[in-house]
Image 1: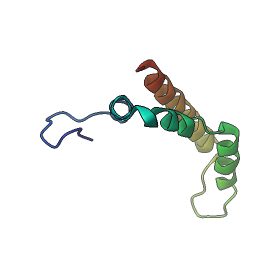
Image 2: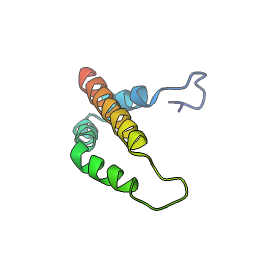
Image 3: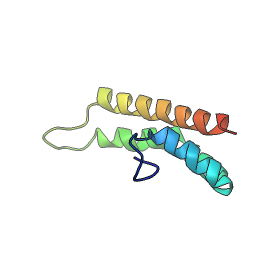
Length: 85
C-alpha cells in the first residue's frame, strides 16, 4: 500500500496502521480493541475447519500453523501501534 499515490515506496501493513493511528488519534483505541480478539474463539473456529469432508481438507497441523501465525501477527501489530505513542 502507498500512503500517497506519488510515493515510490510502499508501506507495510504495520506502518500504515501506525500512520493512521498518528493522524486519527481518536481511532487508535478502536484499532487496538479490534486486535484484542479472543484467540481461543478463533482456535475453535479454525479447528472446526479441519472436520469438513472435502477432497483436500485443512490438516490439524496446518490449522495449528495458521493459529500460530495469527497470534504472532496480533502481538506484533498491538506492540507496534502501542509503541507509536
